Length: 461
Image: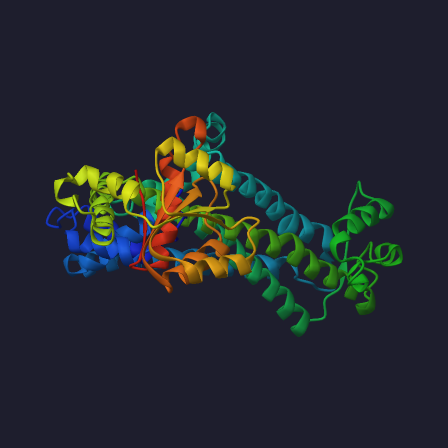
């Protein structure tokens, strides 16, 4: 499996534009393929970004800038509007005069309880989108939200186009909603600070159905995350009783209330929204990546690169493993006959000698020197082996085990010795005739390309 490379919005827009520009050649030259194979991380996104780099002269900067400006403008509009709403709402809820108090229960309900409930729904929506993409559950519970919220907002803030499809706009709006929610909370927090700084505010509470003991239980439950580290931000039973009506105009009693409200905003407002912002950004960048990889033109380019990269494998074998009767080989036979005949050393990485010999007998392969390394073999023994090896080397590895740092160090040190070439041969299960799965070979091929050593290649059957 290819590792997931992150793609930025600017790279996505540029790439999407070129993929749908008919004047741009959707294939790459053999020289370009060599660049991908030798110098780039073998991920689909990295290959496409390399193709983008080589075709960036075809970009229409003005058209792409207009799209980016709309995205930026949506951020400015949403955050600014929500910040103003949060500030005004917080300021109005904190208004105080001689005839009324700042009602804590009303502030808690409007600015903490409702946003927290919405955060929970947003969290589950994000989880469904991230990990439950193809299920009916996602379609049932998200379609209504997408139709009632995202679709109207997309028409208002962003216009769908070939480089900005509806799915991407939905993901952008999801990020904007979380950013807007954070802006609202910031506005409310600033309103709280400014009000406390500039005015004498008395906090209290009023309720027909809630008594003091019930309210204390609720407050202790809400304040559980900070009750031990910041006890002064938890109103006591005495404070609750003394601030039940507006006649208790004590600034000392009010201190516990504004600290409590501030901590509630942080714990139940900011922290959940930062988590949701992280999830929405993850959804957004996953959406960018999947949208590109599902593009039919991108698949055409990747298919061409994948097929053409086999040429470089053949060239590697042709260059480093010549035999006397090589001129009679076909291009298909070069790799197989070379693997079977021209290696001075055979090494089994993390294999037992018995398992290695059974595999070699099955493949009818042999060499003058057969060794094992990795696994239980000591580092000193590996160093002795590296210093004694010369000529052509083939290393057999279990394809389902991803290459680790000790293997990379071993082949890197081996390439600095007297060897002329090193070929990595991923093996499959014995029951499958030792034929590896393509996704496992891709992992090893990816690692070899990262090492980027002309002496090291990989056998791709």
